[in-house]
Length: 255
Image (cartoon, rainbow, N blue to C red; front, side, top):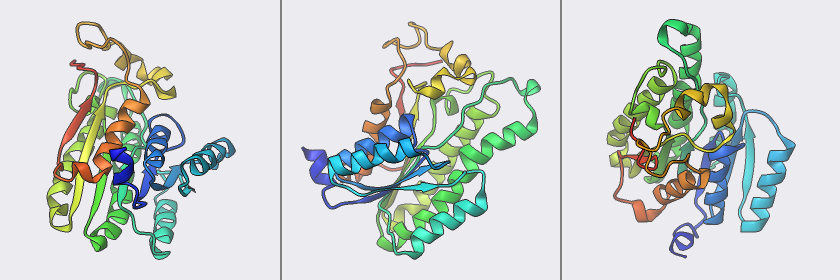
């Protein structure tokens, strides 16, 4: 009940990578707390639109899909700038989009590493730089970046994915200092491997090997809802004194 009341003033959120997995769980959770949402997906998807229409009606909120490929900088800027020009003012930004990769440095093409950074890091910078302008004008806001424990507990095979998430964490901490005077909080959530379609990919097999009983007391993968619950907490005013933090959601897992 307390969460619902905290977002009853219809805060507006932008969530990238919300088509499925953690991203979709985030928009579902925020919608349940009374938040209006711009839900980003790479491609137009009728199934996705049906799901967000259901959420919109079920929770009596507005959820609008927005489509662009994060690798297409021109399209990214065009779509977000059009929202800003239409006087949309954002209270919450969740950078959830990302791609996973596993491979030893000697076996990984530099172009592949650049692509991972383009999606996981540089596109996040682009989105954040555009949307936080509206937050600066309002003198308030919450930016939540979804990183990974792979960006903290770096190990072999993480020359692209892990280092891109480490860069995200470093950027978020830096931005938290810059945004303090504007009343904007910046925090990071670092999940361990989460039970999504991505977890079934070949690229995720390396991460699964670390989910052993002696390293993970709960002996399972995280659930998307367990990540999105933390997002909702950081989006709410009850977390108003939390900024510059990296919150692990990993079941106690340590590599």
